[in-house]
Amino acid sequence: MIQLHNVSLRIGSLQILDNVSLSLEKGKVGAILGPSGAGKSTILKLILGLWQPDEGCVTIDGLDICHLPENELLPIRRKMGMIFQGNALFDSLNVRENVGYFLYEEKKLSEKEIADKVAEVLAFLNLFNIEHMYPDELSGGMKKRVAIARALVFNPEIILYDEPTAGLDPINSKSIRDLIKRVQAKNKATSIVVTHIMNDAIELGNQITLLQEGKIIENGSVRDILNSEHEFVKDFFYEIFKDAEILKKNT
Ligand SMILES: Nc1ncnc2c1ncn2[C@@H]1O[C@H](COP(=O)(O)OP(=O)(O)O)[C@@H](O)[C@H]1O
Ligand SMILES: [Mg+2]
Image (cartoon, rainbow, N blue to C red; front, side):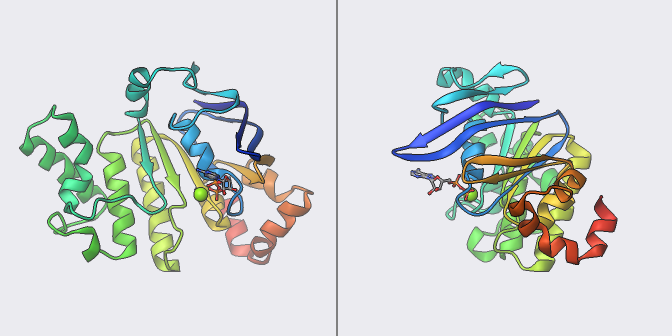
């Protein structure tokens, strides 16, 4: 279970997060939806323990991770797979080396064991014959898949996706959403999908949190959000109301 308890964070004079409380049960997908600059990526950094809040705390399965020394944070972070918005692949490493990067770093497994593990994850993601390719040689959709593969090699209990479909065309976006659902069905991880795209939140989230200027303005099921009377929510979902198909399928 991932929880933020009354979390506030300022950078300089800017209030990045303002009294944010959030709770996501084990095995569920939480979508955090909001416009650019709302503080979505900041929430992921706090969950990863990369940043500490000024007030409040973040707990993972009840453990407060905001006051832990780095050496105690590492095993917790090891349970998390993060897919960065820009993928954060290493350009000078091929796909196998990228996907196996943290396994090579850890030096617990042999070359052969790592290669097998990488091949297994790539096969699950329907990525074949690309192990020797470099990120530059891959399309945007493929890079995203490789970034997801790298997050999956540790069989993470928590998966954090930062804007997984940003910059992808509609077909690739759909294929990444389908992939995330497949990963979820297999791994049963507790996952957070941060997005400014309504389709992503509605299709993927068991729970949707709307964030605006560092504040949570709505939190609930797709139906709860759609029924919200909040002006911002109405504006945000205007496109969805027009599209009865999506509503029928997912509420
Ligand atoms: N390292 C930083 N230094 C100063 N301001 C930052 C930093 N990172 C993020 N911000 C500011 O915090 C706010 C929230 O950022 P972010 O969490 O990245 O938003 P989102 O992911 O929703 O687009 C923005 O106003 C952004 O400019
Ligand atoms: Mg962001």
